Image 1 (cartoon, rainbow, N blue to C red):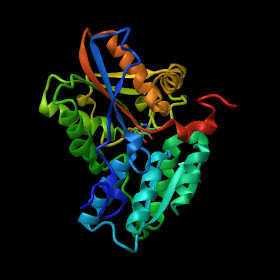
Image 2: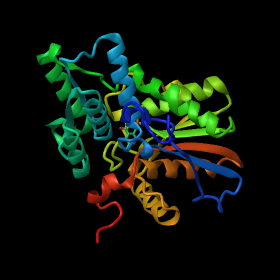
Image 3: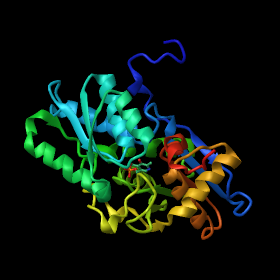
Length: 305
Ligand SMILES: Cc1ncc(COP(=O)(O)O)c(C=O)c1O
C-alpha cells in the first residue's frame, strides 16, 4: 500500500495519536518531563473517537447493533461527534441527546455528519441527558442500539487496548505518573488499569471539577453526579478537584506559548500536572489533551475580537 493511503475508511485513523512534549513548567520543575496525548489528532477531533468506535464495533460483534437500528446515546458533545462520524462512515443512523447549552460548534458538527439531536434541559446538565435517553429507549427498545457510554466496558477497553499501550511504547516504558480528567471515566479507568498492570509503581491521578457548578465541559463532578458504572476508584491514587478559572488560564497560556490550541479539559489536565510537579522531584508525567480549542471559540475562552 502506498504510504499515506488509508485502505478502508476514516475509522482506521482513530488512535495512535502523537505524544507531545509540554514545556510549560520546565523552568519551574526542570526534572519533571511532561507529555500529553494530542487526542484532537483523531479524525473526529477528540479522544471520544476511540470509545465510540470500540462500543460500536463491540455492538456489531455481539449482534446488538444491526442495520435496522439507530445508534442513540446521551453526550455532552465529543462522544456525539464521534458517534456521528463513525455512524456515517459505517452507514448507521445516529440520534443524540444533549443539553441545549452545549457549544454551537458541537451542534453544527453533529448535524454536518447527518445525526439528529434531541435537546435536554440545560439546567440538568449531562445527567438530564442521561435520563432523557433512558426514557426514549424505554419507549421503543427495538428501535435503538444504546451503547450507554457510562456503563459500557468497551468504552474503557478502547483505552486499555489503545491509549495505554501507545503511552508505554511512546515513553519506552518510562512513564511514572498518569493524569486524566473524568467524564464517563473511560479514559482514566482503561488507561490506568493497563499502566498499573504493566508496572504497579505508576501513580495515577484523576481530575474532576472542584464542584458541581463548573465550566469544564466534558468533565464530571463525581460526588454529585450519576456515578458511571465503569468508574473504578481503586485505580486512582488520588482524585483532585480542579477550579474552572485556573484551567481556562492554562488553556489560554499554552495556546500562546507553545502553539497548542486545546480545550477546557486540557487546561484542567495542565492544572493537575503543575500541582503534581510541585510535589515530585522528578518523573515522566503523561496526561491527555482530549480535544482542541477550536471547539470552544464561540464560548469566548480565548477572548473575543
Ligand atoms: C473535552 C472532554 N474532556 C474529557 C472527557 C473525559 O473523557 P472520559 O469520558 O473518557 O472520561 C471528555 C468526555 O466526554 C470530553 O469531552
